[in-house]
Image 1 (cartoon, helix red, strand yellow):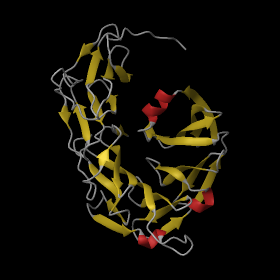
Image 2 (cartoon, one colour; image 1 turned 90 degrees about the vertical axis):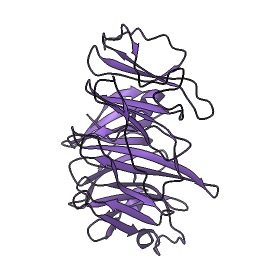
Image 3 (spheres, rainbow, N blue to C red; image 1 turned 60 degrees about the horizontal axis):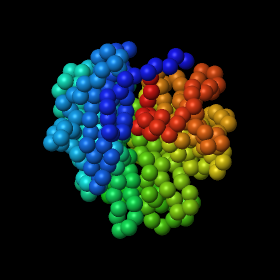
Image 4 (cartoon, rainbow, N blue to C red; image 1 turned 120 degrees about the vertical axis):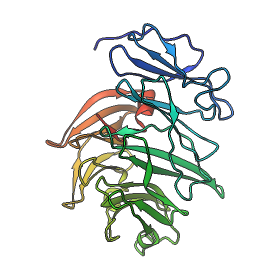
Length: 356
């Protein structure tokens, strides 16, 4: 592999993200040392392959203009030379801080992202940037956090757009102390409510209170909801059919079935499972109701992604305290190692669910 050296700008700050979209055009996001949940943010651009860098006007200046000083987690992504996004955490409110440029970084605007009903008293402790399947359709995963009567609550809300990111809506989320799941159906524009008391308060669970929902996600065609939740001594998962409210209880069969991610093209759910010291990658075909186990030699699977064509799964595997980014070809079921990862690589992948 050829090694490339860049002449970085003189900074007393830390580099949060660097990305090149062509051999010459790239961006560098730098941040100051965070204090009291605040951080000065700087964005630089190069047009000559990294030989020189220019600070662009979205960044925080000495007067803290541009991106807000609030938040100590910042992320950035560009799709081509014109369309870019910067996200910032918000530890003081539920306002989603997301900025966008459509002219190559010359001007930036704050994008309006609605706060779901019931989340007004939450905050956002990690930065989020969108993941686009094509020019129009994308997703934005936002982790909302709060402390309620001494108990930490963390929920991931998935936003969707079908107009290239101009408008965003939350298509599925749990709220009301995890008693209900709300689904906004893009096909009909209606909102459906599912009472979790019908699903997790059952005799075979032997519990007397609503379980703590960790993740909810909607299949690409709005037909199925994946729900992963904590039980008093374990985790479990179900799939709810949006049309009639019936559900499939499959998590106990595979040790919790966590980290479930729907295919961008099919009713297929990729998920991780396994006992302590032995991780597994599985695929559930909801249309045909069958499971497939991909045997991989890792003690833990940290994250799963789909490629945009829906024919490969990528995952982060842990082996002897080392992490590797791997891919599974669904046509032949074989996996291969793409490259080894360091902690910064893993952090940059944490917000992705679809990769190119």
